[in-house]
Image (cartoon, rainbow over all chains, first blue to last red; front, side):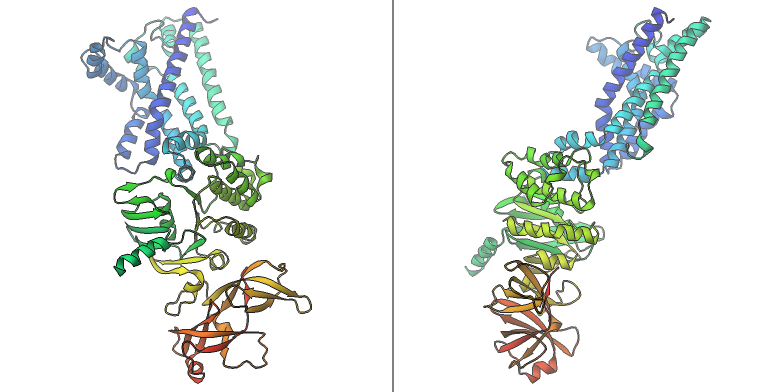
Length: 225
Length: 370
């Protein structure tokens, strides 16, 4: 069976992925909304920055994360001045780095969903006395519900599968930053093949079930987003 | 101060005063209009004439660079003020029904109602009744037919209790049977609600059936504006709604002749004048509109037996040029009603027609507007 350390790593993984997904719902939604509706020229550059983690090696992202959040980096200086200490090798630092790393998985499906809604339902809402904010929550969000579901699942799953960024920013501290993917790496390093097998199987089944839910949940692939 | 007086009078008459200037690449809108605060005003024109843009400016969905809009004494837009759409007491019906897919019919109807603090539940019940959608309330929009969807959209716009109803070609996306299904509801709305309506359309039959007031737009400019009967019988410009110049008369079914399948229509404002038309099965007392084309009106100084059944006493009012040099337009008056005739110049000369002259109108055919 899974050892206590394995369970601890899994639980940490779930907490990390949950925290990242919730944070990105709050941050990614307005970004996606803006990208879907703006006509300004910097829509392109911002969209490209959001998409960067899709192509960038996680080690590159982790490296910059270390620089910025480290004791001499601007964010590190700030957190130390606030009495929080440097963020690398903490759970909080890991969440922040993962938020950037998983950003496109939240923003892009949401942006597509918002774009598919178009201008019209929001105009209708305005003629029915709804303020823009009101219309966003009572029309745009419900109509984009499938997009929110897809984006959340993808973000959660992608964070679960993270490895490079965790190693760079979080290191390998049990209960703090040692997530399941790192734990598997440790097992393999220690030649504990049987334990690596079990944990790997858990992640494999999890990933398959998530993707199955995602694809099977779309009725005919037509309605959805 | 005659100028000031005239301006004030114009303002009193114009319950909606709208002036918009808007420049887009390839299109500009430049209108200055006074519109009545009651009845249906048709904004008529071809696609690209700016009629929808004008409507969107009134709704606040489009913001003209230069604009001034006053509705019933309230300023909605001027140099320093901008009332956003959601604070304007309007109802808006889009060309496509645009129902909220995530809400039921009732949810759609209640959406605006919930947000309008001073609305009672009456406009909702009234709208449901008026548009005959009581049996659809629990359905989702994707379970409705095109016609039903547009009826729900109209009811939704009415349910907010608007003080001005804006309709953007509400029938254009529908096929002929669906249009037939909805037009009677629009006529009811027209008859039963004292709500001013701006109605955008490119369909002459909708103008003929629904409009009291007509604004004709071309390339972002107003080419004619005024009461329907007056605008259609102008002799100076080619204001045509449809292919043929003609007048629209309002009336009521007075009698039905079962033997000859004819109905007698009393003309409103026609000093007792009445026309016989084919009986279309409408009951006595029903309000109808008649369309009399200019080419179906001929004139005579003394009536003689003829195959033409409808002969009305009237008066010559004015002359105008026709597109063809052989022809002339003649505007005629029967009581307070205006009609248009298209005669050859020779006929006008032979009959010695002059403004103010009494004359008999022979009307070859008058069709119920349908």
